[in-house]
Image 1: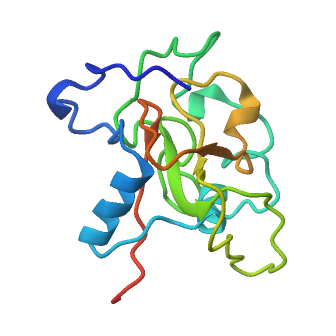
Image 2: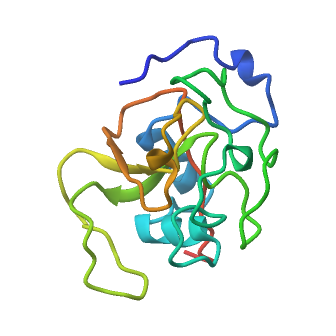
Length: 172
């Protein structure tokens, strides 16, 4: 588990950086308060690919560090997050789907072999872990930045690597 650094973004002074040090439970509570949702794992991957359905990365099949916030040689050498939108958007106009922070998804973590091909739904129950996607500023190995890469964490885990994005589904 990554080490949480208490002064990573003191007083949330970096207003243009992604929110970090947030658990799945905190992200879910925020979404509930704001009438939003965390994306499902399938929604997150679809959005990450940006229209490039069979490509490894949001920009194609070749790994390119210039297109995301990540470490260069060893874990953490990038020093932290970058401003949101500092790197090119994907084909859907979404920034930071890969790199910067890993993003919580609503799904429980389990084997991922959906039977549905159109908007597959994750398990409605499961073990304690939840899905986190997207690689982070701390990672350096290219496999962790593939659109299909998945990670699991306990819903109470917090780290300078974890953040979230919300999905608006219309009226609840």
